[in-house]
Length: 42
Image (cartoon, rainbow, N blue to C red):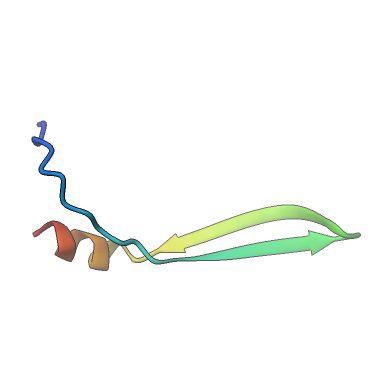
């Protein structure tokens, strides 16, 4: 299933969680607001 582009803008909020050990990033996790994104798409 393909959708045609409509040139509308959207915003997506996310939280990024970085785990550090010995001054280095050892893990990255991200959680985005998918419901908010889908509501903008209609």
